[in-house]
Image (tube, rainbow, N blue to C red; front, side, top):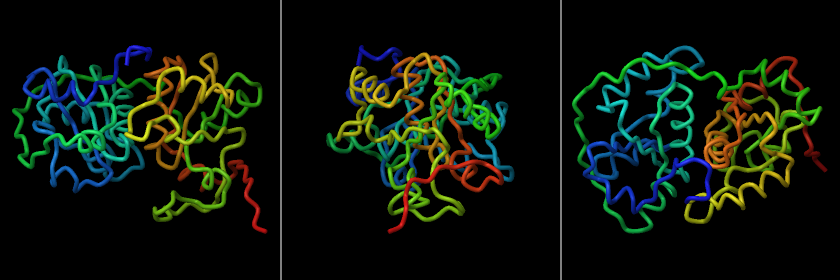
Length: 287
């Protein structure tokens, strides 16, 4: 994995070798929150992407101080190496990685291939739930350069038109075209319009992964994005429906390939598709 720009991936073998390392902490983040209780890597604690990271009332995240408290309750120290992994080829682990990085947390890594690869290799899962000793993590400061808001996305349309910016829609082709308003096999989430943000390029997140859930090589990833005009010198915004899939692509672009300007639009299509006065493009036409 040395061909990636940053050292942010660890293998399943590495994790297995460091299960008893007190300076390495594992966090499982799944879409299916029942998976953890059915079995997880020994020593891993559970993070619920919705109840732990989202504000209970506002459509926003918990604050930086609350993130510090959360990590402290999980027994994580600032100097620890924190390895995130989960289901769906690390969708939600990447979402947590992006959010924690945005919140100022350092020392984060993803287990390449996620839970899928660990299980496929026949590695052990346990049901014992760790009871970590609470610690004081310390203060955190948000990095707003990693997050895009609706009005910033609207202003970014001019950069896309001028060729200095890029917009990456990581959803399925049918979502992008406007044929459907949700992922296959997923419920409709209340989006009123189908389509995509004007000027966006459709690069589904899964095109960055191999069949076993691991990331493709750096050269393959660069070629994938360059073919759609997404190159390092551009200011890039990625989006999907609520930013879980686009976090995966954000991780590829910023952490693996080292693009200097990559933001994740967490409002994504659930906000843009319902926004009054926001422009969309729709290529699907019923016959």
